[in-house]
Length: 144
Image (cartoon, rainbow, N blue to C red; front, side):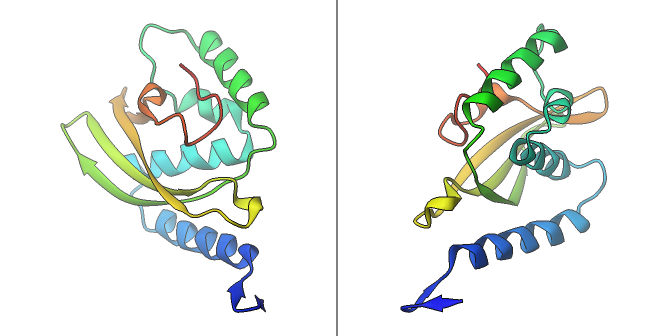
């Protein structure tokens, strides 16, 4: 586990996943933070159907959103990251900002946590991510 005083990166990834799992267990079933976690899990596992379902993009049909996610996931097929949802800030009754701590390029061994905001919008009684508002540094070729 320890090599020359350093913790192996797999230990850090496992710890982040365990903390993220505990957070999900205690989240309400229809919260913005739960939807944000579902979105991040879909992004990490290349679950394109879930990404489409969790994407808020008014005036764009599901087929076009799917094409955008197909492009994104192909561009990032070798990109690996770890994340944890840490905060939820309500702006209005239908808009919430969820903070995720993300370790980008986790397989390099030199990654560190960075803060990214996921803008959430309540649509049809379900929270969705407005992907147009996510910082593009979080994941390669995010839809625009």
